[in-house]
Amino acid sequence: MSKLTRKFVTYLSSCALSTLILFPGIAKAQVQISPLVIETETKQGQSRGTINVTNTSKERFRARVYAAPFTYDREGFQALESSANDLTPYLTFSPRELVVEPGQTRRIRIVSRLLPSMKAGEYRAVIFTENLQAFESQSGNMTIGIIPRIGVTVYVRHGEASANLAVQGGSFATERKLINLLVKNSGNASVRPQVNWKLAKGGKTVKEGKIEAITVIAEGERNIPIEYLSAEDKVAAGEYQLTGELFWQEDDKVKKLSFNQNVNISAKEAETANQPKKPQTNEQPRTSAPAVPPTDRPQNPPQRTSPLPVPSINRPQNPQPNRLQP
Image (cartoon, rainbow, N blue to C red; front, side, top):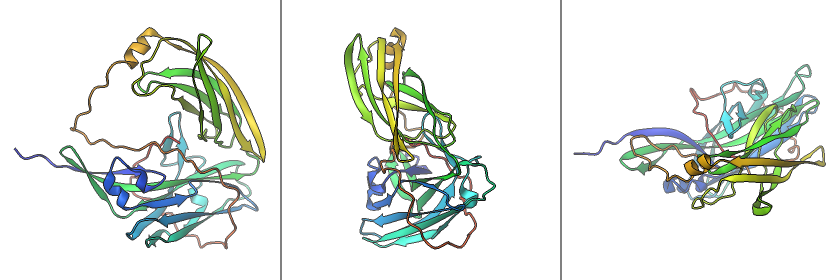
């Protein structure tokens, strides 16, 4: 009996295509993009920036460039069809398609133009560089077609805009065997705090660690994952104390927010978390989006360039949203 072969096309995002180690064939197209996060403010209604695309492979890299609105929900990145904070109608960039020869770097220049009468706050978009070549990878009896794309998140502050963080609580996530620290941002500007944390039980330290910059979107909430166990460790029921500090930079000042949360893990939750995971079947393809937190620090206002012509937004039909863990 012959094996059934099905072909699927999906989007994967990463900091660099070479990081997609689950699909070794993709490593042939090693492309690096920087910065991954652009934060800037409007001056006389305009802001500018530059994205660098570097081809570190021995093959020519061809890609198209397009923008889309996005947000971060409690669990991470989410591409959107529309948003009240959508920057794309006011965003121009060039080129829309690019060819990067081996060892070369090309620049994507971006300009945003906002009207003075627009509401003060933050406007944002993600600019995707999408490979024009699909890669195939074998998964069991299935051939998966993969179109890699790399997203750069752009935040433009217009008028008075600032973040306002508050810790809402901590809870245990049974499926992932970790503790979520829920943080709310009631301000009108996103922020990317770092987190120092310590987990204790009965007065004894279980583990402590540091989380690099993680996005808490304006007027939104974010679960910050506290990964205190390895995959082999067992969850112990009981009352835990999670303490620490969030800190971030805003207006050239370092802001800090301390937290002290009690987290109870019930015997039932511990038992469920410790049960062996059921093996995955090959009846459906596994769409794998590696966890790729943006590690680039937020940029200072980018270098100024001459204004660009205003091309129309060329957004793909029925884009498939990505989930990332920044």
